[in-house]
Figure 1 (spheres, rainbow, N blue to C red):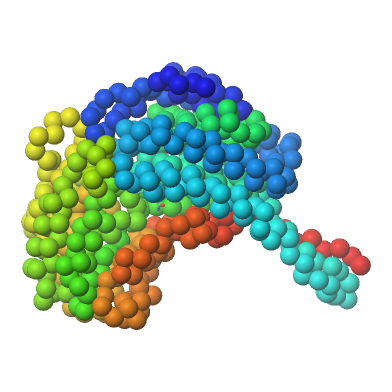
Figure 2: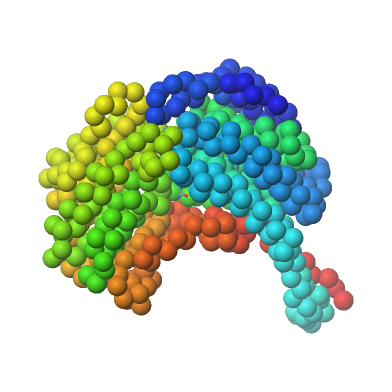
Length: 486
Ligand code: NAD
């Protein structure tokens, strides 16, 4: 097993260096160079696509249900065996707070592979529609579900294991072959998947290919190549738009998980202290670098000032800390570029008339690493840039509402529709508000929607399609009707 600080590509079943050399991966908490990842060239990507195509067209992968389930379980076991090493790697490369690696940053998505393996066994691959006589011609009809073909999976850096595995799990369970192109900021999290697949599983060569690269153009290459049947993309809405446009040339299927600007609605019968404290915690977890994080807090106007005080105090207490520390909720942001982007939003918020109830800049005493203090912006309206655009940092905007209808109106007044939360004393009423939110997921009174069996995705400009759950699995299937003359 390669255990050096230089990680490789997985192409056609072999761990190989990149023709483009290697690029560095950096610890965002310290700016320490962790090592290098293989830098794939366009030719490497071409070979990976060819391998995936051949594995799909010329092997029994797509029809060997039991074999596929076994390979997925081997992958899960291989990753579990390396859990300690992966945990440290994830904290270092992603800047993910340690506590999150016991959930969505590592353990949960690895465990969830079992759910997809079980689904291969349990899924109704064929449905008998019985006999009919369309136009007087006796026929026996069946509907068969089968794999789409070669999947190009393009992923971001914020929850790399979750997103890589939420694509690999269902895509492979469905019988597809995959070329995974991870984000340049977190190549190791993907490269270790390649190592485990090559060394600890029976996945046939070409079924999974992992192509790390410093160049976004390799993602674009996947979207344009006619040998790729489906592009499964998670990332920003701006890039998602490019992916969709570029996939149109070959009319491939496109599945998009994009950005969000989700609302945390506090109703007037809620326990304000509990709700606002929870909003603070939820909003700055992993430095706010989660697409479904609730970054607009909507509070009853008459209790606005009190809500600001509670939220600001909670944020200041949580602070930004070393991700190695198991009490840390908010670690660093991923890069200097991302920090600059967030600082641009903070400057803009002030120009738009906003004020900081806490935070608003870099924390004191952290000279190395990419840090932003947990920040609460007051005094803005829902049409300000900080309230409309995805900041992807530990920055929350608090806005007053005038009752349930107004809260729903403000929450839905967004180009995004990914997620949301509602807190209220009367659960029936809170549930009613949740049903009116135009988003793919909603939490009521702290309920957690995340899980292998729960479809996740967005309305409006937050995406197309669903990831995870049976709905997510079916994104990777074609439907074929077969009629036999009888
Ligand atoms: P990004 O859009 O910059 O990049 C995502 C991936 O796309 C990377 O692998 C990148 O190399 C690749 N890419 C860039 N340009 C491309 C192109 N023209 N064609 C094909 N691929 C291209 O996003 P990011 O900065 O890595 O991640 C943060 C964004 O991801 C945020 O907007 C966040 O909301 C979103 N996100 C969404 C979800 C979701 O499920 N809805 C989950 C996590 C993150």
